[in-house]
Image 1 (tube, rainbow, N blue to C red):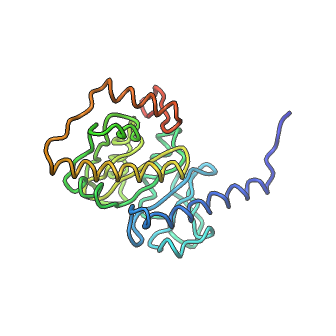
Image 2: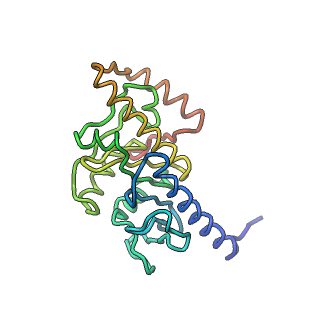
Image 3: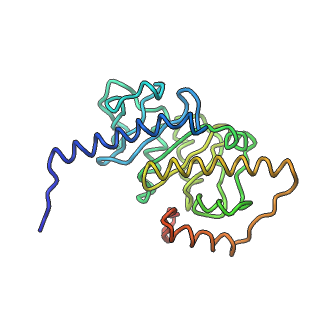
Length: 231
């Protein structure tokens, strides 16, 4: 039997996703991921994506203020989408497995990014990235196509990356999962920064990382396939 989606169902899903963005946006500061109006969230929706508006404090964002953006970058809303909408769009275009993106400026991830350092396999939780490292994308001015291209490259085969002199990005299947991943990346960044002060961290080898990735896959915490843009 074929089931048809009604208009009410479509409206309900749109509203639910908007409410999720608002709810998780309010968690950015308490979770230590961002401050003020920095950072942005999005979810894939209706041949495009929903994203937080530009320059609006999270406590002032309502579901109606969340901006729907088409894949060509167009939108019909009184508010502008986040100035970083471009890399959200390009991540969704390059990664059919990704349905949510979180961009933030947490202190330890950003500190490593200011040094243009990635995070190696110094702890087994590197598996949250979907690979054996969290790369640091090259520096380009925010909101530019150059930055977007660098982000897509750094995320190739990964679920998170740092942005040189800027911040970090996490992606995932749901917004809840992606927020969890962003917090885990910041925890890894803090641990790695502390370990560097103590000495030279010992790194896990490929076999050890692969074993953890397989265990994480069984738990459904990461998504893996064999395509060049997969995780």
